[in-house]
Image 1 (cartoon, one colour):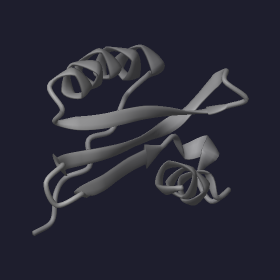
Image 2 (cartoon, rainbow, N blue to C red):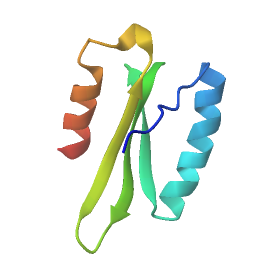
Image 3 (cartoon, rainbow, N blue to C red):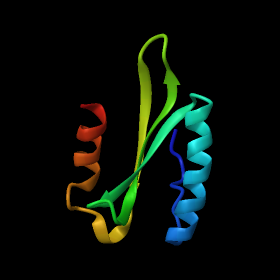
Length: 83
């Protein structure tokens, strides 16, 4: 089943989304992290969704701003998250 990508229109919208992501963490529904360059410029987001603590599984979701695509940002983030 294909899903339409949810794309942020600007950095402020991304910050609003992260407020919602924080609520997911508190409810143990998911974990969402900002992908940044050296802790500054926002490059994207990576998340664990649909957490199942009993079986130890979750889905992974991510997006990367166009300027940061094709540079390995998503794959490095996935490696860091799963390590």
